[in-house]
Length: 159
Ligand SMILES: Cc1cc2nc3c(=O)[nH]c(=O)nc-3n(C[C@H](O)[C@H](O)[C@H](O)COP(=O)(O)O)c2cc1C
Image (cartoon, rainbow, N blue to C red):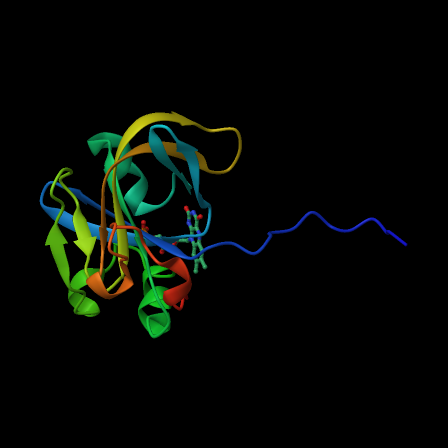
């Protein structure tokens, strides 16, 4: 038998979205994230305007979606609760990063998979602005790649 339930948050994938503006690197935890197109490849991330990262992404038009694995819980919690307004998360957590190859934003090399994205559109139907990013380049730790360059997702213990 069905009963009416509260509208509530569903389970989601844990991602970390990283960005850079005026030479400052920042990252936030984003649960509202999904692939939304195959041709071309696109990623959508939902970000609340109050986040420090929001203006960085809005103004630069680029971001990186990083997929963390098990073992990154402590860092994820920090990234998802502290603001770049108050603290340099990269410094505090000793995060390892590299510059994007295509976009001017940091890639979190501690995360096994990373998507470099350029914003092609955005809408704000509710609390979150949905930034739609074209995926320009995907990076993956070698151990999780097959011979054809495909990510072997079930080999990664996602957070
Ligand atoms: C599990 C989890 C999921 C989150 N998902 C989102 C999200 O989808 N969108 C968002 O704007 N904030 C989300 N947050 C909150 C931000 O990550 C958090 O407010 C962060 O401190 C913002 O950092 P910033 O101010 O440096 O941008 C999430 C936090 C956690 C812990």
